[in-house]
Image (cartoon, rainbow, N blue to C red; front, side, top):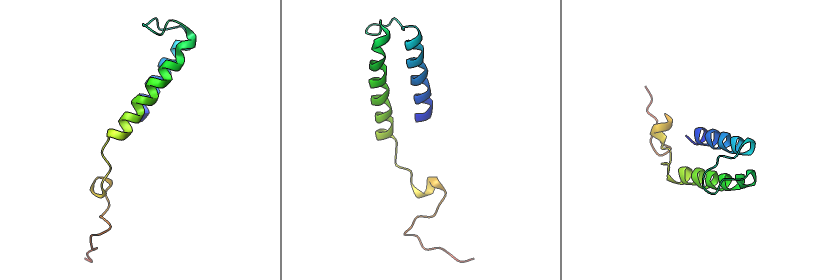
Length: 70
């Protein structure tokens, strides 16, 4: 998910540098730094809010579980 968001924001910044988007607060090319701040905040929020992967979701046995011989 973070890779998709990063790609979309990077394309928006590149498009803004070529031709300003014209949104309120983004009228000049030099306003691209505002998009960078929004991108950083958005990615930080996604990383902080996503759940921590557990051993079950990674397909491995938990470290505290004994391994059964078959």
